[in-house]
Image: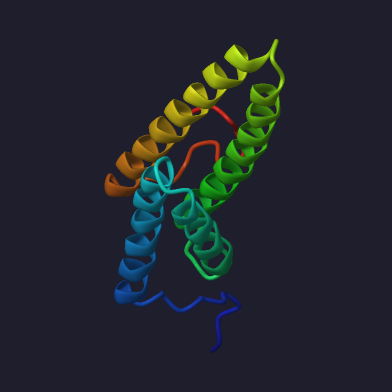
Length: 128
């Protein structure tokens, strides 16, 4: 007698380990990206490439990383435009410092959640 229940095959533990390693590498690349911006670009490309194939809890990390990248990029462009104006220059510099701190905190908190084996509670949100 056949059962109507359909079971999906379990993913191989090695594949999950590889995805977890890549997700952690992305957080490190984002931290380095605060100094060398091109590493953040590499991290977001990895996140886009791996997000659909990853388990659900790691998909939340990849989504979190992608949202962080785009929000930081928009903020950096806006702050750079402000720096070129004489009046808004101090605000632009302060904004760049705040974006730097924001990305560092998001990367560290994401890495902590990853090491603990937890997904991101709100991957679409902009707060930590």
